[in-house]
Length: 397
Image (tube, rainbow, N blue to C red; front, side, top):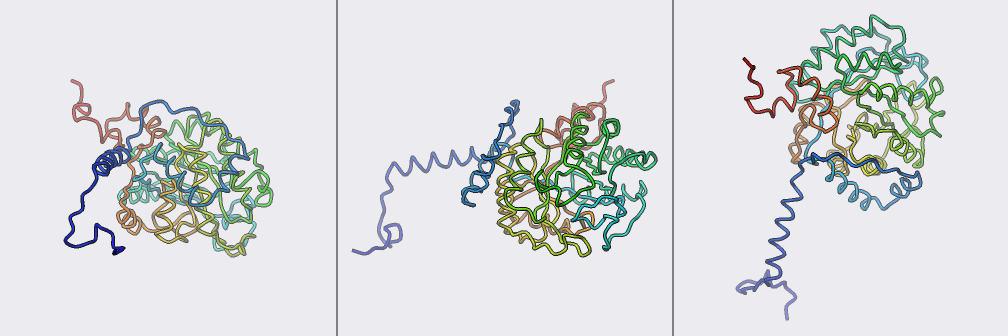
């Protein structure tokens, strides 16, 4: 008798068992329910307390099993079809007194970065408008400072930048080095959505990367940001010479914060000539994938943000990172001092994979932040305003 499957035999009518018909009907209904990714209105459960050994065991799993678990967790907390587009502008380049071994902006190294002045307000607003027109919903501004310190005039200019960009209906993020409690509160009052302050790596490996500021200094700034009601954006860099236990240590540190970070940026080192890290080999895709997947499981409600070095990975590799739980990218014409992918390229990539960009203030954490300012403004342009019934926008006589 032929080994040809019956379904492929010409002229033969195949009787499909009723059990298969029932299974197919059930499977179709189940698939439809799985693609309804509406975020629940219920209050999220308290974050799980992870032991470091548990995070390590998770990290050490066979890679595809880890990715499958991460993808499953991702779908419980996020719409996997949505990716946030963010744009980062260097508003004050070079001349930093810190000795971060990976950074071209340190004044201690001879690199391509040149010390510059803080950008004028209007120049920054031009770039923010350009980013919004190209689909970015979060605009981030970075200044190469150790700390804000006594820079009163410069800080006031940044507060003006925050107010103006927030008025465009965009999420606004800054990274300005260390902050005190008063400075964090002023940023919050200006409308800052998030503040980026990376831990970079594990507590154990940190001293091999930077000695001009301590791990506790970084955690203190994060505490000031959180206490002011600003969302915390904090992550790290892969490829600094660390080992896998250090990547686990970074993720574990994030899980120990009083609240999970709103976003967890994952950078792949760009080895810049003139820095102590110039000879570091590039991070492999598997290393990036394993880190993203582990972070997604341990930090289920956080945005996992693909940051510097994304352009090192192919489109198919980036798609698998999205599958494993990454749901934000930096896009535009460059990061702080390194290249990134253009808006047109990224929109085309997302379209090919059936993905779309998020609106401003779409995530639950950002929706809380937006709610306060949105109630006092009828034209902020955010997701909540766009989804309101027309009657809500009408003026009350």
